[in-house]
Image (cartoon, rainbow, N blue to C red; front, side, top):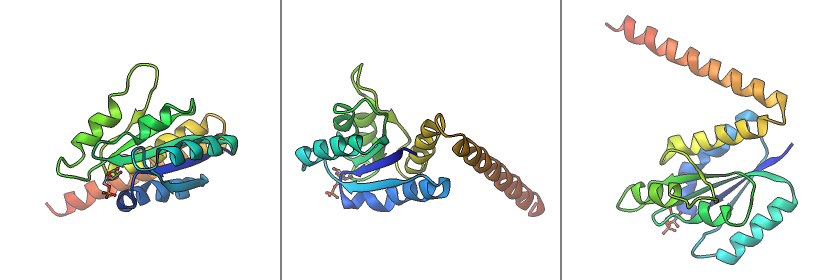
Length: 164
Ligand code: RP5
């Protein structure tokens, strides 16, 4: 099965991006994690993308904060799907990273998810949904996960009703 390459601009993004790896593990999807920056290590970033593509990486997930160019820089070098996670680091709390990640010029798409923790999780689900097009067993895992979500909300509702 194809795997997911996770790139982060800094180790400081890791506490948020752990959420991506937790979901990927739950879905049984293989992944790699690399700290590599669009601005601080542009050459290494490009080399990693080429190497990962040659080893059949199916989807790239890129997380960065502030002037977040990592997802866009990766998308410039590959036609594999790129998912961008804007990280809420810095004084603007992710609004800067959101705009930098989402506002790509036509022809070079980045699928941008929510800022921060929710986005980190959803990046993994979205990657799973992409890979599930070629893997029926993954479809079932995603469906099961939705069912678990539904059950959890129902339980929360019961708990609130009981507390009225
Ligand atoms: C971005 O700048 C990183 O992705 C990180 O979110 C932010 C701050 O990086 P550090 O100064 O913590 O290394 O490139």
